[in-house]
Length: 160
Image (cartoon, rainbow, N blue to C red; front, top):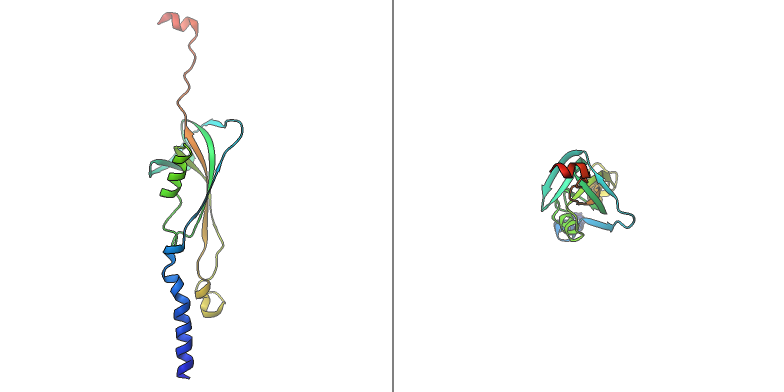
């Protein structure tokens, strides 16, 4: 009987070992896609932004200036194990800057893939299946453009 308890305890301890070093192998998955097509230039209406790591993260609305869409980013991470949120991520900022962008506009942020947990019906109360859910954040990568200079009519030019 004691031997059975010892074996079960040892098996559970060995099963936990990989989870103790999760930050060493857990990483956010960041997909970056360059936009190809006719130039998409827009002027936004404003909103809220967070500036981190040298780029603007527009969490609501759009930049109140001219900008051009240059790509898209999709970030999938377990916020607990992958070291934080996509918004403000140094990895995303690095990819955006390398592509020539100044900012991202957050399109959506969804929680997907809930699994495990202590309330699960799986063996060991779902402990071995834990991993929680992933957050998928989709963002538009933009490059700020200079404001357009309005052409001056010849009559206005003569007044100057």
